[in-house]
Length: 165
Image (cartoon, rainbow, N blue to C red; front, side):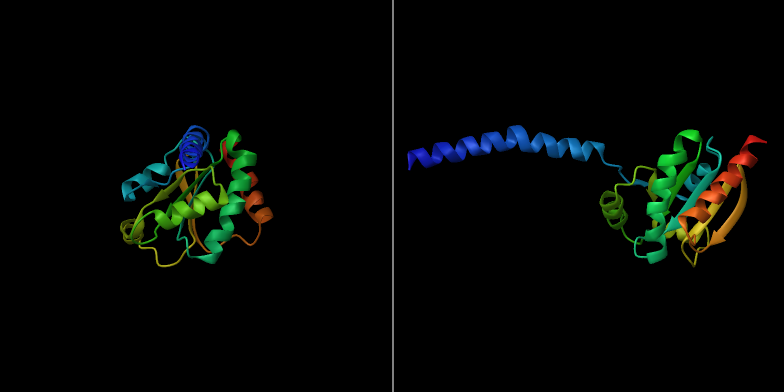
């Protein structure tokens, strides 16, 4: 019986020494969803990136969810060239649903939660809702998803040319 207690004690010590720090590292490196209000969303349009895509979405919207992987792909490809991608969730309640999605997809670009207050402030009734910005100017507001990643990439390249002018 004493031998079993010693084994269990050592198992607990080893668990806390080797398993828990790894879990803490994963937690520390994850992309945390941050709260944002309507003025904060407006501030995103004034970021230094060029071009900027702001996508207002919900985690339950199928078109919105499918765009997230394209955003991640384009962010990895063009983020260091100045592309700004910001996602704002208008899920009601809390940021939990969008955080789960961010974790599941391994998203590394900034994701915010604005909830129903942002939805009402911008009078959004359909998602995905996109705000496209170049040089601090809102160029387009779009409702609906991209038909393909290549369509999104073509738009990015078109806007990069405008940013250089």
